[in-house]
Image (cartoon, rainbow, N blue to C red; front, side):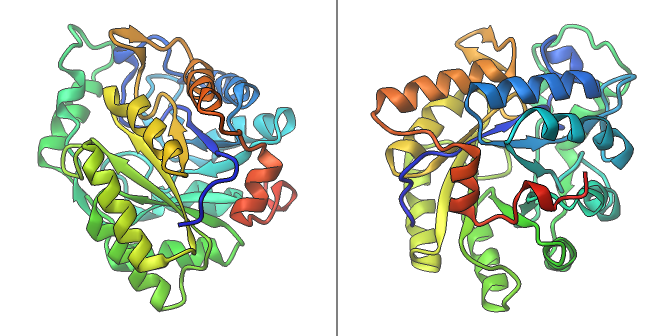
Length: 310
């Protein structure tokens, strides 16, 4: 593993897991997403991981026309690296999932490295009433959902986006996903340095136990040697402890309302920037330095913000 001389903070701004009824602070409209993203960058996020939502009801959407309403604004107001999802919303086709990244040709796109059971049905358990008809069935339906990321699907994403010069945030929800990435590395479809985003605490993926993070890192060390950077995200209450551990181990961190709605025990975060500011304080108290967007670009060897389509 390449140890981080400066820690890259990624902020996942809105995501597709949580619904509008779960927090009044979840950004939904293009204007809200743009404002929250800019504030997160100003708070210290060098990278912004972005989804879109239907502004009418908050439903996850991969319509490039929605991304076009906030990506240029974010680019104009910040220097942050734009990282676009290819996971999209649960149950979407691969064509839908790839559409915004193929249109935008961003510096970085996420790439899930394997299929898994993705059960977030418990996420809405505390919601007493839902504002929109789609929310409860969307969450409850994940009890019988496989998040599909077959080898053929991954290969297509790597080729079509890689041909645009886009690099990847390789999202690994379990140890086997690291071996899946190694398969594509052996075939020459993924080039170092690899930015591994290890995901903990999703029911169906690897659990949020510190020993599992150490195991993921040790496995990645065997597979990729010094050709990768470790980053970590964790769901819900595990967010801050786990990403702090990543920084201590020499890795990078991801926070944001996609991964957790909270800023402390029982206290909803009022914005993405609040979470970014909190992890920044923790990192700086550990006497570690925060990477600027320019430094993050150098670390991850991206093509630069001038070489995108928005």
